[in-house]
Length: 189
Image (cartoon, rainbow, N blue to C red; front, side, top):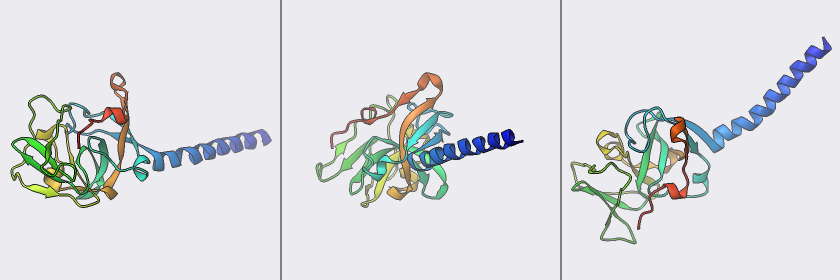
């Protein structure tokens, strides 16, 4: 009987230590994310399994071109995956199928070179109006612009809604990839 209780005690210790390690990692450092839908094709596809870096944005600001996961502003229970296009304090305009960013370094604006999009894909917006972002807002778009619910429909995303940036693609096995600074487009801004 004593051996049985020692065995149970060992299982309890292993489970407790495992939970003490796994729970903080899961809730404060990284989080799994399952892609649903086609809004990020051709770069991220339906049913892909991603790991999200939740800690980096506590020490550094999100940058243009990074792919992020965030809570949908109109229903915070729902999560979206999109690419950061415009940063806090900038002005954005979608005109003639192109994305134009206005900021302190480029008061006349610059057109984004979005080589990660499918060839010939244009960004459509019916208004052509400029949108000025506040100091905590990011403008996000899906890579599949014709099939994406993004900032064109629900507005800019406040930083408080951002969960983290894509760190790793773990599934499917033939598309495993680590995403770091070199993975994101380098813009002249």
